[in-house]
Length: 259
Image 1 (cartoon, one colour):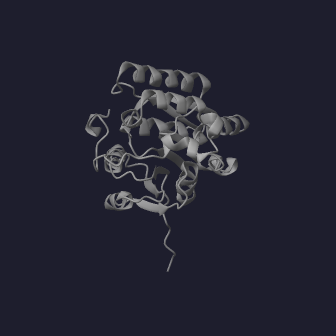
Image 2 (cartoon, one colour):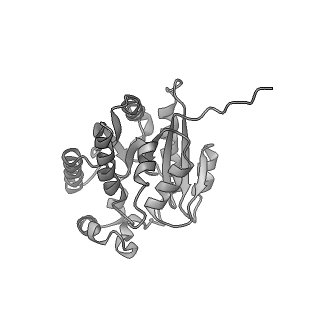
Image 3 (spheres, helix red, strand yellow):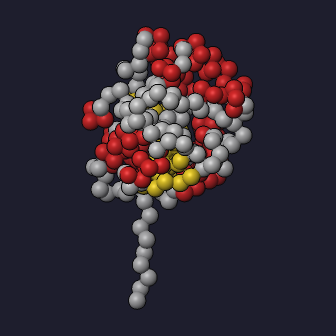
């Protein structure tokens, strides 16, 4: 009797999640919807329960996705734990309060399939951000992202081989791991005659931090974060959760509106 062959997924979507019961269900629904038109390619979804104390793992399991546990509450460790469990040759990192559109997933896979792109990110959709000064801040990041070729952590993709060769995300830092990884990935891409790119397909997210913290607090945290990225106490903005948020609260726009 011939041994059965196991078919591996083409790509792995990794969602780090620490106390994300309010948003995770909507994010997973968007991923499932985006995947529905890709019959020719298979993808897995991995939720990394980063030591949650709410219903995050139960919500993830209700969607039938893979759930892995990372006990150390640190974003870079959660990303790496998900990547270690991933079976796909492509890795896509998505934040738990962010919506993945079919258009963005399709373009990402096309670029990775081309053999010319080692990884990248995409611009942020500021259309639902308010007030105006928040919108302007997001627009500023988009300019930096485009011209400095840096990926925002809410959506970052790469070849798994590149992640392996680089050694994963820097686990000595509590924030900015995606910026460090972007720089390392650009070097890896150049060495392998490939490129790192930022897509012009804006991705939707909740912008919840602008609801939880003052504008001044966020700006100061962003400005000083790079210098204190190894001190978790100084990075609280990235780890605090609002206890008053409602379970399964959707990202501002309905995922059915994604193009």
